[in-house]
Length: 265
Image (cartoon, rainbow, N blue to C red; front, side, top):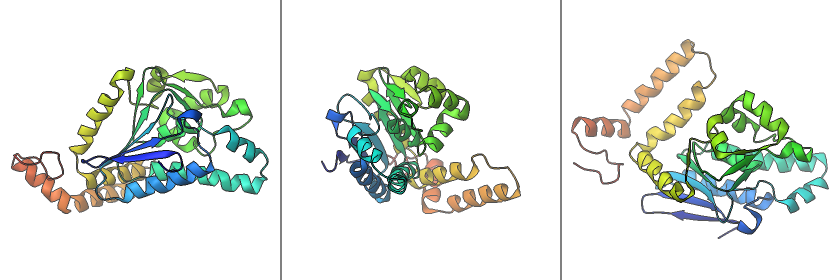
């Protein structure tokens, strides 16, 4: 363990990144933010890593900001606070832009910045008992650096309610808002994560990275001549790539592609 997190990479290339400050409900401070940013960037760059699962040790996913860190920030000037906030913003951006598929394994509390981590992951699966809260307004603050990801995940209309009320909401409500993709019994959480991982492992890793870039490129953009040309260029490039050629050949030959677990006929 280093700086409040643990990393495990299994034989398939699944990286499990665990927030490991259970006594603090995995709240984060400036040191953990810096360490997590570097670790996510490292895992995203490793060719043997196929997917990243983000979870929390103990009773909670993440309670957001560490109280002692918040006390220190209260004594900072505006310039120091800006630099501090920029570091958290970089963590969110690094997770959001990770080229590997990312899954949030959510249980217990996901509060404040913890909601931001969930929103930055590609897929989020929550246990029935999980609770969510964008609690900043209660403290006279705003969920600023996580807002681009949270608003995108749960829609501006929902954000207008939950940012302003700072109320706690359930996993079922998070599902309805689009913040999480699936809610399961607590004792089925790991099995549900594994089922999703099997789906991810069946797809081409280069194609998955390109899919993530594609979504960012077309989201909320006009369908104009430039977009039409760009999307045509993207599929043409993928078709002639080694992975694209191997995938099509495997499909035509009725065999598993080389990246799939247990490849072959």
